[in-house]
Image (cartoon, rainbow, N blue to C red):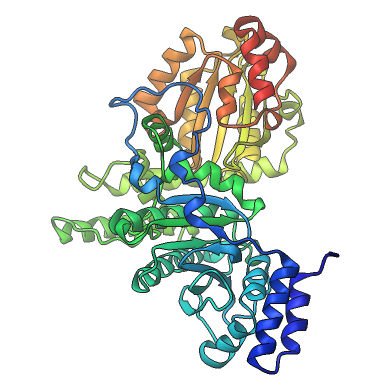
Length: 524
């Protein structure tokens, strides 16, 4: 039989329908032409039966390893299925359709659902439903689908200026879909990626919201569902394979690794986005606060900052407290602390302007600091080659400017650093005073969005320096630092093709780790 486009064939057949008999004949003709095979959700392998990926160095449970907010739960893992295929062929109680507010959007998932469901679905939408607001849901019959119901929802358009609004709307989509499924008595549910690249929503950020919302809902209402099928497209399956272990870890080791890889904010009790700067603060004596405000106002005027952006930086300070860089409200918090942080930020802005205008070729030409691809979560990987950093020979001021020039556009989102201590000498070791100066001048986004700092080929010196620095100067990043004995251990976090490093590092690594390096490169 020659190939016939399903949508074209269905529309042609329905155009000829005048009575029930012709409709039945047309459907039978269509099914024969397409050779449709319904997929039973119960036959799909659940997440609990999918073997975890290699995790690299073994993490030992203990006080120095943070606990995950999403503990391993075999019963929940048995309810989750990650599947790539045609959602319209799934034998489930309900499938989800991501559409627009007029419910006329054309996308691959919607096209397959409308094509398989038939003209009756279009008629029901046009005559009874008509529209659906962003974040809300509407329910129709499944008609010719194997599913009994179709839950329609409208995902948000993404704009970085209104990121919070988009995150809230996307969370509402998933939450309302799950709630409606419970109301309908749905035991098996298929959900595609509701966030859409067509609406500029970053796929990885959308997957985080989807998975944490589903996990939080199952934590409370797991008896309501037998199976939730994440019916994703080929373009999204890699993202879900990497992020699912964070929210649905299958082993204790996977849970420990997940705790280190989760975003700083994993939402509230329902997975909803949280805004720390909008939370109510309770103080012991309001008069003390007013007194500080009066003194602060005078100091701001004397500095001449007026309506400058730094006079509105309270949200940044809140985030820094969460990182441990500033005292909490339980300790004495004075206007002098605020002024010091404001001055640091003013200094950083001044350095950033210089970094964008001055000639830094003498530093960039050394090649000791550069971006090298992305890790398995799509985060930029910054490589620092210690041997090429001649601390006693280079212009340290320009080195700082180049660091800011390279990292400032990258640290607006999550990122990781791979520091190679390979074959370094005392000439490559920066002083503690310089490290402290650099750390203090960099704003909180550098520390907040740093997800991992890998030290490859560490020595006794690096271990002592790391302990001292993260204990007394930078406790905010202590749990993000990992010492790795070989390059192959990086491949659980990033693929070999995304890691570009000098030849002397790989040659040295092979001399001390032998065949393990070769095997890791080939398997990655």
